[in-house]
Length: 154
Ligand SMILES: [Cu+2]
Image 1 (cartoon, rainbow, N blue to C red):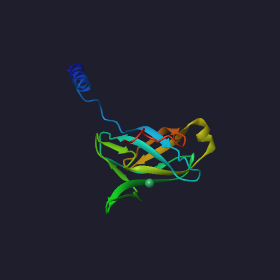
Image 2 (cartoon, protein in one colour):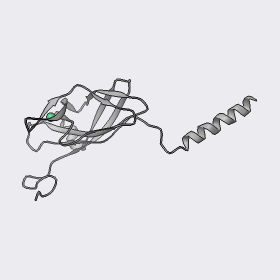
Image 3 (cartoon, rainbow, N blue to C red):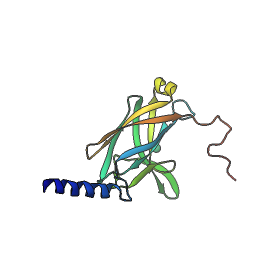
Image 4 (tube, rainbow, N blue to C red):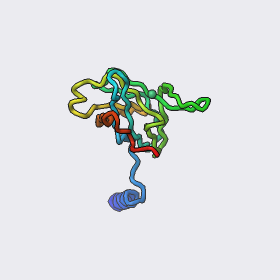
């Protein structure tokens, strides 16, 4: 009887696993530090967060390779685009939150030389639900002066 029940449960689990949606897992992907071309100016960190099986909130980001960082969002005010600091970001279940040019981003001050030489920096993302996710971000320099970023505008 118990054995039958176990087989039934195993069958049910297999059915669920074979379902169309993979199990949601909170994760951070596509992390990139875009270095400022001007020495002393802040650089920017971009990434995408994929929501897990429950709603959560990104509370903080830290890195041993970075002196200081600050989460910002870009807002329109009187037709002008400006940015302001934000202290947290909601990440809905199975949702997608993008930190990207012209939107939310993380200002980064003081990328240490070791990270610049390696071309990567480790970041730790802390969430309200207790997850702490380690992410390796690629460090990218802007194109040399004279070459417009993102191609030509016509
Ligand atoms: Cu900013």
